[in-house]
Length: 489
Image (cartoon, rainbow, N blue to C red; front, top):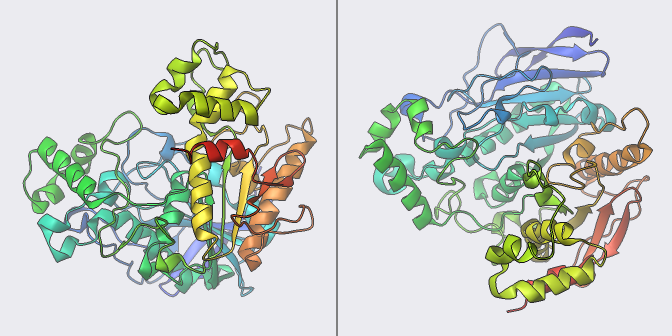
């Protein structure tokens, strides 16, 4: 049972009460408000910093999460309890080895589940073990999502709502400004910040690299299974907005602000996602250009990154399939046809060459996972001309059923993966390889460490890639036929 001791940190705004977890040798502060409420007249507006306070504010409970479809993003790490949702959701959490003046490297995590759901308080993102292992400070962030964070209103709301399509990104930027100004109170170095994230979180890292006003708030980025080369086009953002207003039967921004949060969410929510699919908007102002198409955005130039994907990404989304793992040769064309169209024969031949022992199910998983692999390669190709890039592929079958599926690397990065009471000792090796690489990168900008083979920088001549597996190793241009077949007309 965990023993906790009250700990107080004094920020530039006031004092906060956290908990010292004696069994983990870290202190955690939960639910810290870095921004004021975004409800009512503040909906769709740029985030506002919190005001200073007197006394000591409790920071031992996770804060609210942005309204969203489904429940998975609302789970706490410890109890599985559902957290409240509200528009007062600009909160973050801090894990630190000690509240002192040691100026440790800081890792700021942006959660996954696209731009439609999720929270920094999900159990997958417990930062205690990573903070202790690396003597680093770990921060996770909640921010506005879906229609609350990305409804474009500039053309109907005027200058006041110029950045409304990117309000959720502005929240993340404000969180980084809070880190810069306050993390020293938690033993961190606000001038040595690395941002990282998986899936939608990786896309958030990609996006922040393209935001001019965020330049300098972080030194480097890590993109896990979330390569995002470009933002939502302006015309698409306008169509999305029109659909929402039509469904709500409103004609002005003021009416949109007056709609209840529940009704606004109901207009776009499905069981888990939101429709339309909201995300950052290339608005010509706050986010002026696409992040990595055709080149790295000016604000990204010179920023080192780690980027990678998992071998069996799409297996996660097939996990509920009652026929999981079963597919005949005759069923393969139907499963892949809509995706491949006139490329079917060429693509299938390339993947058979690359994976000669793969059965039809394995081929389906590999080909449908290609969007993650291709995006990773394309972003690395572009950015390696402008900054140091390190590319990886997570190939370790972390889950007996799903293999190296989407999100399976998170536990290894956070140093949380379990070796099942010693039954799989290689889990420890992969956990060490990944978590220490992330720590080293956050400390110096170079992921190499003693427990890992030399990891070279990526370039388009060698395409050196670290393969994280039971025996981690480097390959040049791994599964090359799979990469090149998509380049053919």
